[in-house]
Length: 138
Image (tube, rainbow, N blue to C red; front, side, top):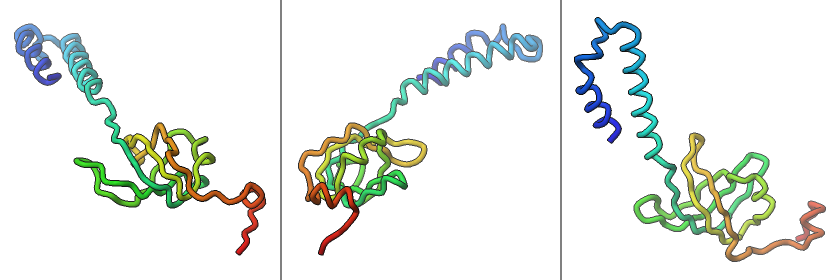
């Protein structure tokens, strides 16, 4: 759509904006049209989200990711274990291995990120004393 708009505008002003005779003002106007068209195109390319349902199998908050054994997302991703960053860093402390979650997957420049994480069923959580003290019995 944006390219079509640019082509129509260029054709309409082709005789008036000859870069050889129009000089700098003609070039700047054409450049402005290109940036406007690209802006319109970018606005139509909103980030797509995909619903994730899965189980937390690993939490690496210090390294900034969790691993989720996710169900298949038809048309997007097979069922697999995959690392994800969390959009909200505060979410790491609310999760435990074994939690069943739902979330929205968002593609970012650094991979995939999870937003709107909801624990639908809690996994096994150790007693509060063991969580805080770091001691493990066994």
